Image (tube, rainbow, N blue to C red; front, side):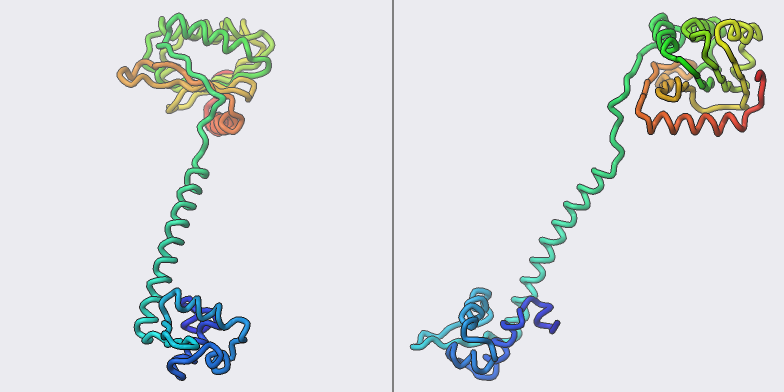
Length: 262
């Protein structure tokens, strides 16, 4: 591609313009002969150049065409290309914004929130009903806010947890050392009375409490914004990708934990 071609002239347009620079004012027939552009195309090319103000006409019979000065032509071609590039830039920017929004993770619609503080009656009921849905396994991590809760408060949720559990399921509990310190040993005996299998492991600390039911739904404790020893509720999610990620996190932490009861 020639330099004038890069600035936006077609091959025929460039030939006609260069011919006019040599011939000066000329008729369409003369320009066709001088440029090599076929007579069947010459008027279309001349009209395009005139519309872009790169050539002008003389009021003669027949009409004669004159090339505008090269500096003027180059400036006008550059202005055209600049405008085109600005339009392209705006289009690409819109495409980029659309791509960004499409690449953002979609908020899960398969989710619900249960509001209720630690040990409250509504949360005991919700927890018991939640556990009743388990038919195979429950994986749970117990850390904050249970670590700072008095045993009487924690006890109400523990009892609701196991009261709702069916006898044939297996439960894997991963607890922090701080939770272990506040939990009486009788809890573990109570757990074995309710379910078929209980495995318990301990980590020095955990950052969030959650459980996974049958690897199909996970509930995550939502910390209370004003009271570190409490929660404001839990969010339950059954989006498979999210549940799988929490299960993966559980298994990684489980492999690092120290067995307490297997």
